[in-house]
Amino acid sequence: MNYDIDLSKISLMAYKEILKTQYLLPSRRVLLQNVDYYFDSLAKHGINNLQSLKEIFSSKKRFNQLIISTGLKEDLMIILKREIGSLAPSVVKISDFLYLDEGVLTALKTFDILNSRDYYSLFLENRLNSDFFSKIRLDETRAIELFELCDLVRINGVGAIAAKSFLDAGYHSVYDVANTTASKMLERVSRVNDIYHYYKTKLGIKDMQFCIDYAKLIIRLEKEGEDYGI
Image 1 (cartoon, one colour):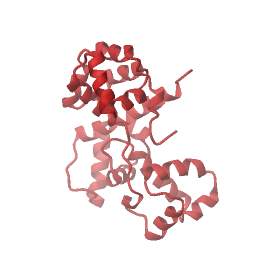
Image 2: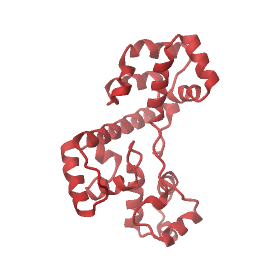
Image 3: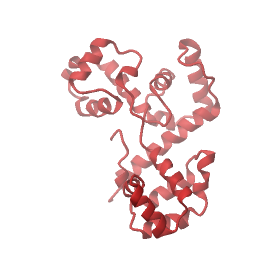
Image 4: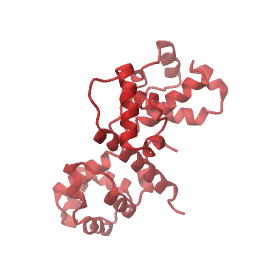
């Protein structure tokens, strides 16, 4: 299980089917128009997975060549580029998480742990090593909690503060968020925010549903990656 989704293991056609059913922002719903046609055009261009497509999108020269050779609309491909770009999880500075004191931050820096990606990976490598927790000056409970926060910020739009509110509301992972309902999540998170005042913005059902839908997307993409080659 990696912090980032391995886009090389997500086939182009598998992503097309995921795209058809996932929640899209209104400005990106144009991606569903003639989706079979333009994905077939991309496949005929020799693009087999999302990593290959992302690399083309990252090069202005290769992007322009793609538009010319496929005849696809540039505006549409720009929107697809943005949608695929949103699959990259946010990377949050460790210092942004609320409860970590300077001693802990200094200890983490000795392991070159500066952000959520760093900690997520190192925790998975050392979670069975009891000495690891003492070295980073966190007891096991707090170390696990920090890992859970780093998992939650992988959800698009969720930062350190939102992740803490989700955790306090009983959502410990991307999986937990994916398997709740928007109404239940809103009730729990709002109750937590009424107590701790994490943020002033009034949340709504749509905010919760966006997080749930994106958490489901992460799980689907990870499952697709696990099934790759089987």
